Length: 278
Image (cartoon, rainbow, N blue to C red):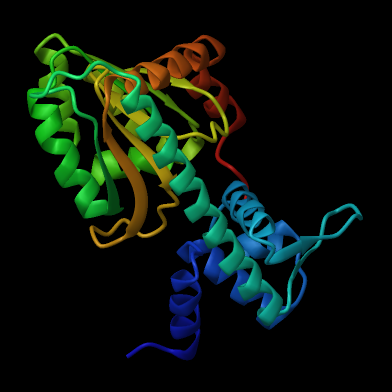
């Protein structure tokens, strides 16, 4: 049976917050303004994780930072916070509709062959649907798999058995190129990917998250905040079969790749710094 706190966070997640955002916001509501260090200790996580979660809450209009140093974070009153969350969801929906219209416009500009050149779009709504969509693509993938992904995606690779499929693709002669925000907790998983032949680079806070398969199929994140690694975890992503859009994403990837640094170089930096202090 859910406790009052569990029920409260569950309802907040329904408003578009991640589980970590809901827990942190509830903590600030219950215990008042805090700096990141006591928040990290109370929530049993890293300061870096707390900063990332606070940033998300500030963007949603649910937390206010002070102007002093050290910065103190205060929960916005519940009614105002929920109103901000609703507006954020409405904004994301409008953005998704705009992307869809842009893609449809791109599709109209092409000379399609009736059999295989018609663009296909669909919205992916859960982690399970994402994995079941990706696995058949990986088994038939021929040349190249490009990924600009969030840190949590490395955990998904590890927990849901994606590594063997990736290894099989690489052994068939395929190339997997990954750009990720490489942080201390995922060093082990990244080294596993490097060991099987993945080419990985670090770039912090990429913003636009997507993956491209053989320059013809793409999956673009609309909301990729993963907090619980469950197959039922809700996400929002746009699946597109359209070569023009895939080429556009590939060009964006190539520019970002030039600005990023090799994973091993980043790992050595992190090991020198040591684990984040709670």
